Each structure stands twice: as C-alpha cells, then as structure tokens.
Amino acid sequence: MALELLERSPADVFSERVMQIVNDGALALMISIGHRTGLFDVMAAMPPASATGIAEAAHLSERYVREWLGAMVTGDIVRYDPPSNTYSLPAEHADSLTRAASPNNMAVTAQWLPLLGGVENAIVEAFVHGRGVPYSAYPRFHDVMAEESQQTVVAGLFDHILPLVPGIEARLEAGIEVLDVACGSGRAMIAMARQYPASRFTGIDFSAEAVSAGNADVARRRLPNVRFVQGDVAELDQAQAYDLVTAFDAIHDQARPAEVLARIRAALRPGGTLLMQDIAGHTRVEDNRDHPLGPFLYTISCLHCMSVSLAAGGPGLGAMWGREQALEMLAAAGFERVSVESLPHDPINYYYVADAQ
Image 1 (cartoon, rainbow, N blue to C red):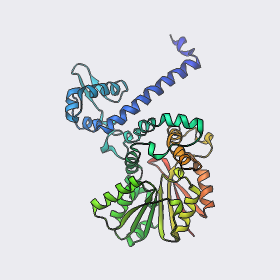
Image 2: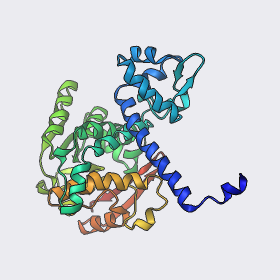
Image 3: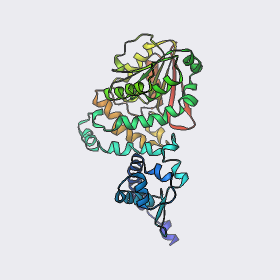
Image 4: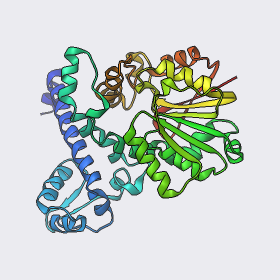
C-alpha cells in the first residue's frame, strides 16, 4: 500500500485537487447561505441541538436546514454527534463565521461567490465579444459591498487606517473638508462624521441606489456634517476644495481612472492628502504566485472589477492592476510623494498615502 501511494501519478494528484476545489466551491455557497439566514449566529449561541431545534431557533424550514447541515458536517465546519442526533458549531469556527466575529467574519466574503455566479452567463458571452457587464447585472452588489466595507474599512478606520496619514486625526478633530470617492452607501463617511463632528464630509458615487441608501442612513442618524451626492468623479470640478480625499477599494473599477486621479489631485488643497485603499497585488502575474488570495482576487476582477469598467467604456484595469501600475498612475496625476503602507491584520489591501504639495 505504501508503494502504491508513492507511485500516484501527477494526474491523480491533480484530479484530487480539482475534487477538493469543487467541494470547497460548494461550501462557499453554503457558507454564504449560513451567513444570510443567520444560521451561524444562531448555532454559535446555542448548545448542541437537533436539526429541528436549530431550524426553530432560526425560524427556518427544517428540511432546508437539515440539508445545509449535511454540507456543513461533511465539510468539517459543523460537528455532528450521531448518538444524540445533534449538531454544534465549534467556537473556533464561529470565530470566522459569525457577525460577532467581525471584522474576521469570512462568511461575509463568501457572499461574493454566489453573487458573481449570477453573472456567469453574461461573462461567458463577454469572453467572446470583449465588452463588459454593467453594474445593473449584479444584484445585491451594494448590500454585499456595504458589509465588506464595514469589515475591511470601518472596523479598522480609527485604530489603523487613518493613523497612516500623519497628523490627520488632530486635523479632523479641529475641522476639515473630506471627500470620499465612490462612496457606495457611505459607511466610512458616516463613521467619520460621528467621530469628528467639527469636520464636513461629502461622498460621491455614480449609483443613485447607493447614494439614496447613504442619505437615508444620515437622516436616521441626524448627522448634519455629512452628505452624499450622485455623480461621476471623473467630472469632478472642485479646485482645492478638500483637505482629505479617501478612495476605498474604488479606483480600479473606474471607467476613467486616470481622469479620476487627476481630478482628485486638483480637488486637494496644498498640504492635502489622498488616502487610497486598493488591492494588495502586483502588476505582473508572476509576482502574485504566492498571494494567499490570488485566485479569489483574479476571479473577483474577471467577473466584476474589470468587467464593469469595460462596460462603461473604461480600460478594465481590474482588481489586480497592481502596486506598480498604481504608483505610475498616481505620479502621472501629479502626486510626487506617495508612500505605500500595509496593515498586519489586512492581507487584501495596500494603503497609498499621496500628498498634494
């Protein structure tokens, strides 16, 4: 038997790897469902229970919950005890799968897989005609992006991200003008507006849906120092109007990224700063071979980031446009001094701090 194991062919080894990929892809779909239905949160808060008990606690159909549990058990995510016919979510698994675990809740990120799967037919057609797929084809995009933003931006905003800009916290406390580019539903700006009431915050996004959601949130919270407007950042015409411009995971999606960066540079006052979060990758594919999330990021890029830019007539930079190209484009936009920072808890992003002289 030992000799047989040693003589396994490369084809057999790869076949097993593909089988594991298929299983893991299926689990990603089920993890997304577990997040959206609240099953992980329910199970984390209860002792071992039957499928019926879990379904009742989550107010869901027992038959569907039982089948979902089958995937979770065979995927080694949920534990099953046959004698008692009960299921449990280990605490060490809950630490990566529940809302209480945020910003480490990977179930939020798993939602991208079914979301992008919904545009597979359109992407396959785009492989032939070469054009893009518009934002309107992506249901739930803004909902998922808002959750992702809460984890990747808002959760670390005050302790980790803003301190990357020297002296910015004191300036925000004193009162400055801040613009967030491609703000989405505005969670970062709302958090900053609450933290720094003396400063004024504006978010701009092309999506009427996202802007409406952001302004509704502002109204609920009764925040007088933040507003969201619909518009194309490539058409921004506000010379020296802002002390700080932020762009969180946004520039590579743009239809006219070079123009956006140039408009941002023009909108900054002397001594102002662009704080740009973008994917931690390199421009050359060979330099991304060891990236822990390389396949995921190229997939996100192909099925969304690149495609929405192409659909709007853009260059289709993609999520993996890379540090090297980002620095070239920032320099071309007039940013002479740029530092690139990374954070220990965030393997996905770089943070570009670009000063306006």
